[in-house]
Length: 254
Image 1 (spheres, rainbow, N blue to C red):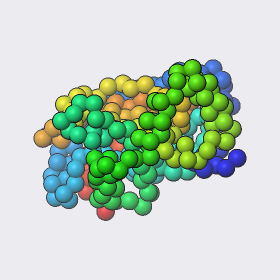
Image 2: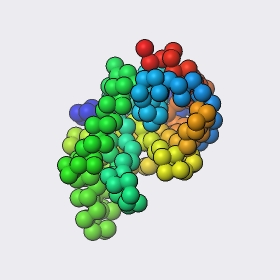
Image 3: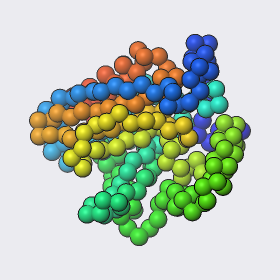
């Protein structure tokens, strides 16, 4: 057991029963629609020369630090904490090309401020839009070349290894589904937030989709959460913190 990105959490018998009844993430998915009105955020972003999406990532960071339950995941009938705060998202390599999407993953450090998160995201965007191939791209491209029947067998073997924490670290580090959070800024393509499924492969217990952020600071989010990682009250408190970081940005990014 190398425990590269996991630390086992001792949980209550209630949660163990829940895991046995709902053995997959899709079965344990609950969704929450969150409406945010943050007029202060509009002026804050202009003053600090920040963009909306990186600040949302910063809000996620603050939320996870205050509510560690949000960094948990279920694997093989056990609950673990992520050791690393990895985020996966889609970046378009060419804004004019509808199919130039790249599913990428990067790490956010707990000590980062909003400006640090934006700088890290900008670095990733530059890397993705250059000729340099991201490790996630290499992994996904390689998997796409495998014949379907071979992939089906391989994914079962890999899942067996993953449950026992024997999956190679190189795969865990490159795979965008081995992550704390998958987040999609659908507002950037004039879309609205939608309820997104979770993935049974990997370690992601939370997917967030974002609608359009308008000039008044109004925006909608949809959270898809694996309810097996904690209690409903913990989720509501975490979402409340997330809203507060957006609605009162001057009180958090200091």
